[in-house]
Image 1 (cartoon, helix red, strand yellow):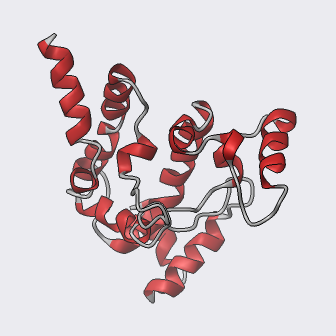
Image 2 (tube, rainbow, N blue to C red; image 1 turned 90 degrees about the vertical axis):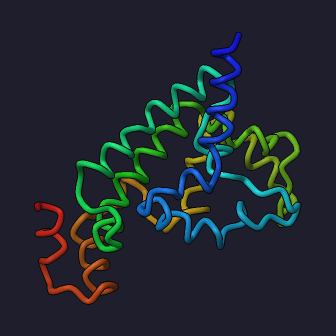
Length: 185
């Protein structure tokens, strides 16, 4: 029983923005999050990192936190993700990984707050569109709703590494080809 209580408290403490941004590289991901509707929703109920990135249930949440240690290992042994250039260069891989996770669990964390049967929007047919896309095309939230919270990254089908590298070079004032070299190092 004590172990279960420990896991519950562990999940609670490690699902907060304060914990997640305690690594400098995750702080860079939090900057656009703080400008998003998930941070400043009209309802006033803010979604913390764990609301979106950690499954519900003590064992599933513990497993997600265990899988998240890859980020810690990358922070320690990988490239210098605290460097904004390196961080943005590697961002597509992180975005694609997160999107796969959402697809694999049918956007379950989205559905904790967003009930598909009560979705409303600016268009009168918003609910019908959501139900039809999910039912007829097998889509899940993340298939349409990407780039809502973190820095914009194209979908995998349209992503072009060379174009991304050029964007990074322009944004950070790098020489042509320098982004590819930084990725290779």
